[in-house]
Image (tube, rainbow, N blue to C red; front, side):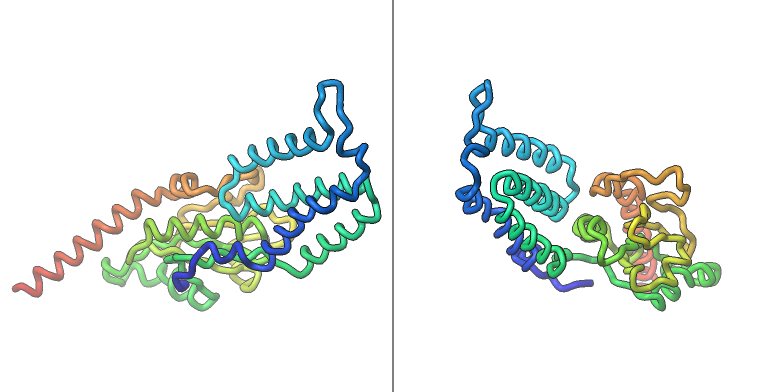
Length: 274
């Protein structure tokens, strides 16, 4: 469980600062471009630059509606706006475009998009904890007392994978909403623990369509997984809050877990009263 850091501080990290500069620098770059490129007017009276910016804005608005987090949208915004600047610069001043491309390359190489570090009830597990707390639940479940039963929803990710980092704030939000004594949210970096990736059949290659993978465990057994292992089911899944909630019936599981906790606590209270 991470400390309650202000989640918006990550937007002031070097990755964002240097990308903000890359975007705003267009206001300076355009002054050195061929004026006929920018101010060329078509038959409808629209300048070429305005046409391009309008098309880019429309595209980014559509992407914004489909993004699952602000992290994903800003990453998309930076990528396509820098592409726009590069194309315009190449057409209007290729030497300036080369400098801009070098600057963008430096950002890409040296600055990683920061990971969400705000309020969360997600617990980070390693191989030992995964085996002892989650998988060993399978062997203990026949002997263990009912009150110790825990359902685990596990987020398997790679720290270098952008899509995993974009979904991280969503998983944290769900943990704040549904986490309790009997329903616990866990994250495991399978880029670090290859044994877990192999055991859970999760492909961690750069071209993997299984990142991230979310698995639900009960009594040490896997009872639900997204995406499915069947290769024919690999498709672009939208890991937003509503979908993850529905895929694993988190609201229902939280209600059942809360009921069982209250039931056990009442039972223990009555025993003390006797």
